[in-house]
Length: 318
Image (cartoon, rainbow, N blue to C red; front, top):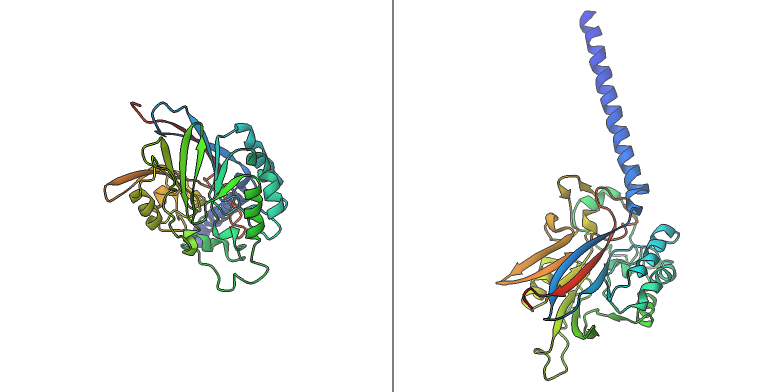
């Protein structure tokens, strides 16, 4: 009898502990789904890559908006970014999450199209995500479902890209283009989404006798920062590489960081500005933590949605 009575408090304690753990888990999911995923922030970075004598230039990096109809908080925040008055906007893809998202997305980004911009697509500019177990996001890189090309999963990519083009943004889908900004020639080279194995390298823009001696900056743009893509652009002399796709891990452990990157990038590089080196060459890479989430896993934890403001300055000693 006494032994049986002694076990009751222990069982009760275990029961309370299990209950508290369950409640904590529910609380974390609720926080991630209703608070953090709409707790937008700006990450500020500075990088000295401009030619001698150049004045500072502001680059706004957007990625992984994943807009769904009715996401008013996200749309309003995007509109408000125009107050930053960036010199250049770079959009690294995955803008959509639903077939009806094109018009509200273009409306939300319209104020930013008053500024020069470039873009490349991500897989969720072609195909809407298919609903699945949200925990599958943590299992490893996602794969495109073989039936994804069937309606209604196919998105109106042409309307999206036409809208960006009408707004003045340059399409860098497996293309290269130069844009003059503040008296400096910016050479861009972009690729289609490496996550879908669609990248085809276009090299750098050509067209003048003093192409390499005139002041210029080389910026490479891709959606998914697979190592093969970073290796190529670094070896090809890029001054800066911009990418997204990772969502910064989306679900992170405080004090540790991301658990996954949804590609072959190491988890400690899931977001931020870091150097990438290959065969003796080094290039800074900015990986955006992204603005949205997958519709199939609509929450963030210890990984706030972000846009990135990069202040570009002249190289040291110039």
